[in-house]
Amino acid sequence: MPRHYLDHASSTPLRPEARAALEAELDAPGDPGRVHEEGRAVRARIEAAREHVGELLGVRPRQVVFTSAGTEAINAAVFGAALAQPGRPMALAGVEHSAVRDASARAAPLLELAVDRGGRIDVGAVAELLGAPERPALVHCQWANHETGTLQPVAKVVAACREVGVPVHVDACAAAGHVPTDLGALDADLVSVSAHKMGGPPGVGALVVGAGRRFKPFVVGGQQERARRGGFENGPGIVGFGAAAAALAEGGCLEREAERARGQTAELLAAALGVDGVSVLGELRPEGRLPHLICLSVDGVEAEGVLIGLDRAGVAAHSGSACSSETLEPSPVLAAMGVEAERSLRLSVGWSTTDDDVAAFAAAFDPVVAGLRALRA
Image (tube, rainbow, N blue to C red; front, side, top):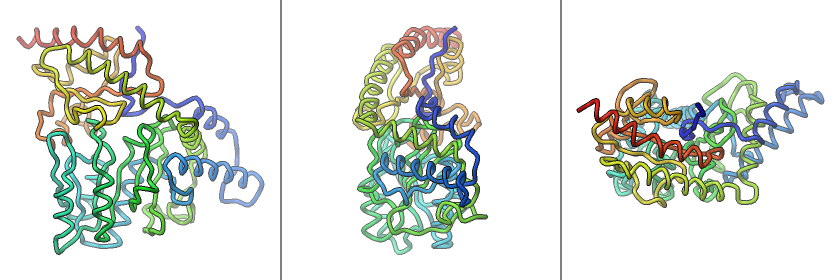
């Protein structure tokens, strides 16, 4: 049976450009910290990759600090902020990724930011919190939600924080490579991104540091990354990341992919809403969410049954209430939104998604849901 992958928001396949660059780098010896020819050659390719990532994100190359993943970048942001202002709280909404919440909870007391039924952060609540006598050491605001795709008012949150001098971290792992992310214009203190969400290799990400900002390194033990992240650089991963970024930045590729993704998710949504008892979770307007991701609520059945049924039909999807942090607990994102978290289904497309993948879901979804409802009855 052919497989149809509709879980690109979890991880998207390697782009051909990234695969070629990564495979070539695997055969290249050399420590990029050494002065011999082999080391200098590896260093040159890493710095070229840094330029490509910086170009895609709208920042200077020196602002890009390569990490092992988006999760490490998030932890580095939290650690640096906590060291700069020990004991001060950190502010975040319940819809933030578990990496943001768990890292922050380990480092400082938490201040909760309210969200609406669409999962959007209340900018007024942020402004009110920033006016309190004890300002937070760090405010988190994701660029877009990883489960519902809801785009956050990130520019307004960053501007409010900038006005009173409170550092802000933006988790852009779900958004980078799918919508334009001009981080230079945004001017956030810290932004985390992930390579494998945009067609780069797994195991590599970046922390983008605002111009002129300084922070204490999270990983120590060397002077790599201009003394901002110790450890031997993952040359193949970084070079592959750079190749994926270069491909997206070339000739309007990102915009074309976003337009195609929006058309494909519209078709998926039409097929899903043709089944009784199915509704959209999160932002209803297409322009208010990521182009490649939709989240659905399916009445009368639990998410695990739908996922298993689709998988047997050859369609890979995801649910906010299944395998959240590798458990079967309900999604904290959907719980924060005040919606039923046990019946969600997330579908996401990517650069390699075909019309056949969309058609496979459309053919399988109704029979799977009908069969589960019949069993329940």
